[in-house]
Image (cartoon, rainbow, N blue to C red; front, side, top):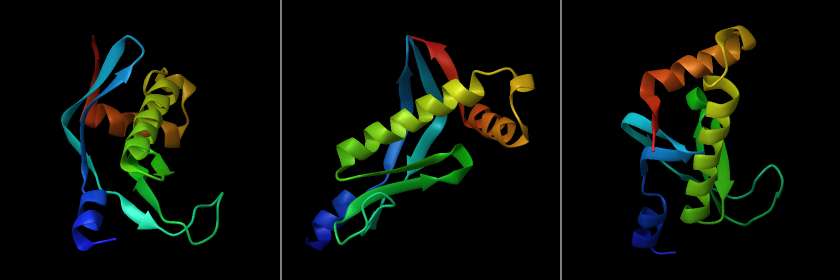
Length: 113
């Protein structure tokens, strides 16, 4: 892989919106996530290269074989976290998941359409 191809592959993603059912999760500022290359995954040890994004503060941890698939997994993690943490009443969350909810609400909101 050439240096230019590698730079393109590892270019950061800027995420402004994520569709969520009939709503949209809209970030106040772009969520910038930088992929890294890894040689294996927890489910597939070996010498194949994968792209990975880890953003622990928003509970995002995904890997894929290409950028399109990686972005789909990132969107999926965001939707899942919004559904399981942000959309829940605070009384249904423990201290860890309440912290995740607060971090999402500090950077994004849900809007109609």
